[in-house]
Image (cartoon, rainbow, N blue to C red; front, side):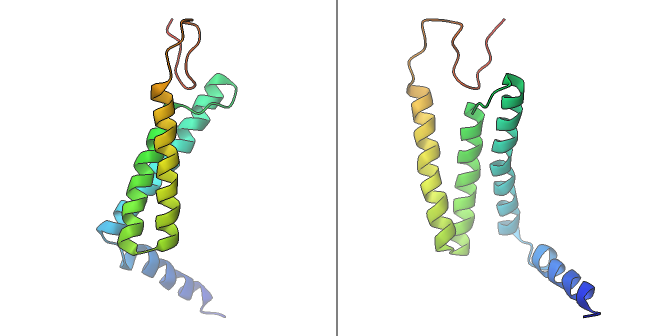
Length: 118
């Protein structure tokens, strides 16, 4: 039990340092993009003083999801592959709904996440 801190440090070194390669770096970049969607959503909601989902949320979801899917395929992880592939369909569908929406005749009405000019 007295060597527990040393064993933990050895494990951390193995997981986070010894096995670092380009795929691990890609995985971290993908996770960063995926995390940024929540940061963007949080900032937009704070500014609006209500919960909003800006278009940037879906773009960060798509970018992070694609990179995470590439990473999962390289790692040959079927659970991760299935989860990311399904997520990509949802992100693409949301973006298609956003960009297909007809512009409103009322200039005061703006899509969620968009800022009104003026």
